[in-house]
Amino acid sequence: MSEVKSILLVGVGGQGTILVSKLLTAGLIKAGYDVKMSEVHGMAQRGGSVSTQVRFGDKVYSPIIGRGQADIMVAFEKMEAVRYAEFLKPGATAVINDYEIVPMSVATGAMEYPQGTIEAMKQEFNVISLNAGQIAQELGNPRCMNVVLFGAMVRALGMDHIDWEEVLRENLKPSILDINLKAFNAYK
Image (cartoon, rainbow, N blue to C red; front, side, top):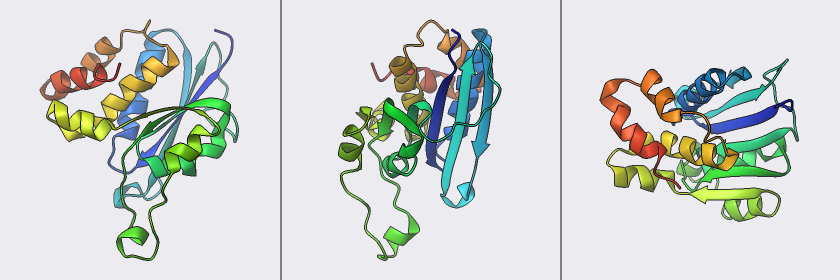
């Protein structure tokens, strides 16, 4: 693979975006790719926006993804998909969690949560929409929503040649491994 691929993971603090980026990076390195990762936490501890950029290929010189350069975006919250859409290439893939985290401005009534975000994204991009929160809840642990999205992203990228289950085993605590293996395989 000579071409560098760029993956943008976006969400809200506490959703596990950074864990997924670390799992992704570990798997890509294990598969022999040169990988660079960059994290932006923003106001993550207060429910603010979090983004992680992962770039991989034969040789990667920078972890930074410019506007219009991402091949795929995984949005852990649907409003975050719209917030970061400008970073996607035309026709790129967006894996979007059909899940809302109400920001303070909406909770106080100062603003309304925007409607039609996924539909708007479908006008420009190849969108894979799923309710990872509901899938995780059905598995018995809503906290594994991030790994449901991770599995959906791996399938969207066609990266099944990497042993992701081994990556999960090597990077997760034994106490949460079984539920996360189920979560990873939940979206087909």
